Image (cartoon, rainbow, N blue to C red; front, side):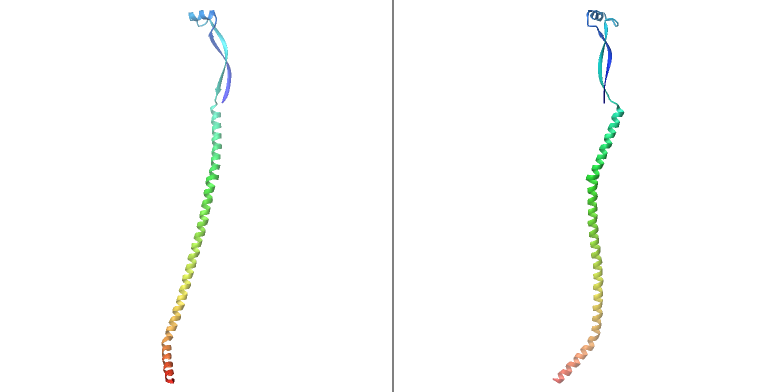
Length: 144
């Protein structure tokens, strides 16, 4: 905004007797006097205002973007990263537990198969052992 002062020439009726007489007769050329007056006015240049508003708007939006980045985006990214790190750890623990469980199951199956084979081998010898033990009992009873 710019303040401008300029001198303007105006006309008015003369203040004396002659001015009153000319005013009474309604003359348009006699009985008038010229005077100068300083007039101040404010001048607004729309282009300057527009440029200033655009400049301030850009500056505010840069500040807003920086604030959003610092106060919103960074904390959200940090929380997301922390969540996925924890999630990854839990998934790895679960994966390791499943692998261990599968290995334990295989080991248990192998142990069970060996026990079954051993029991079958022993089961094949049981009739012979029963026969031998009966024979030994009879011999012992005969000795006693």
